Image (cartoon, rainbow, N blue to C red):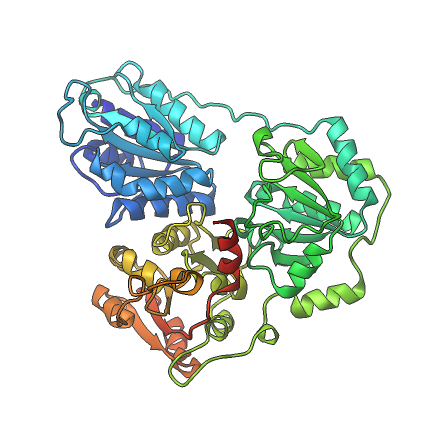
Length: 542
């Protein structure tokens, strides 16, 4: 069979997929081979949407998703999504056709290896019919076990060569996770034993270690928080403070700032998670645990850096502490305060809704009450993004998908496609600004065609709010005429709802009681917030 067919069959046998893409002549055969091998294919309207949807699917499922693109322009269309995935260390495989080396004047020709490398992805290549299987397995293994975004180039002349289908496909063994050294365990145990107000902050690298981290926190009286991308990890714990960083509630920020020890578990403690360092108290000690040695102390100096698996490290430190139990930061009074004010609530702001504009905080809090708790929330980038992040609760760490490593506007709708597909049985919720909504409109058709149970909230202020609120000067370049997003959505086959007051949300309840077989788009006309607090903090680092 063709090399293209062998590559697709091998990946399907390895368990890769599903596949998101736009099919052209260069990736037609490999995509059909994947489908023939049992991989599900989702056709998006743009390669950028395919890359982001695949990224979200991989994050919310733990599987290696695949992006399939045409050579040249097909790949360049997907680059922003590939860059987001690469910066987030998403296990993703991009299958892209490439021009033959013998055709240097081909109009599709670009340096695809260099392009992949420039955004942090790993370039790989199927070099020949003889190496097609090993090249494919190597690319998949790198994506899966090294948690990397890999761009596998398939030159057209190699794709069209004939090769025998292999009888067996080699299965690579997963690498063993690094065990923490005894000295590092003792040092971390010493810091924890001496702390009176410890706080543990877990990132995406700690997803598989929640049980062990909780057990250690119970022993030493630590409060629990997460980075934004790990939101939901400790959702049902009474000592959880939610997200650490710009989205922290006033109480959570105060408690983290007063900690005398902050421990980052699979979390790099970057400027977003620490609010430009303002959440680290002047006398606080810092510790960090990560499987990547280079991540230790990369963003700020730490007192103890442990190269090791989070679960193994937490268990080893718990053993090292022995029978020593400490109340630490915890008390009955604090537990009550966290239950009452740990999350953002109406007590933290003044409702500024008018007769024709709804306060985005009030809107989001009401939607949190209306929408089913069994949900997966995807958030685009922009001035609005703290409202869904802070006011929409999620059921667990697979209920929140935050494609923000590249800080690109326009990824939210495609993120919701992949996240909703990865979590069947949950209601998908996409939170977008009007700028991101208009950028991503094409993928509304994809959501309709796939009959996704999806609620799209458009925080509509007819502007690129970050620039309006945080930069001085002429704003005519970042303000736009108002549009009827609900009517646009109806044109794609969605249910469209314009919301100016909370009374208008009756239409959401009506949609929820129906079949939910076409997305609901809420065009929320929001009040001017004067500039969100989280972006004010973020721009301090620009």
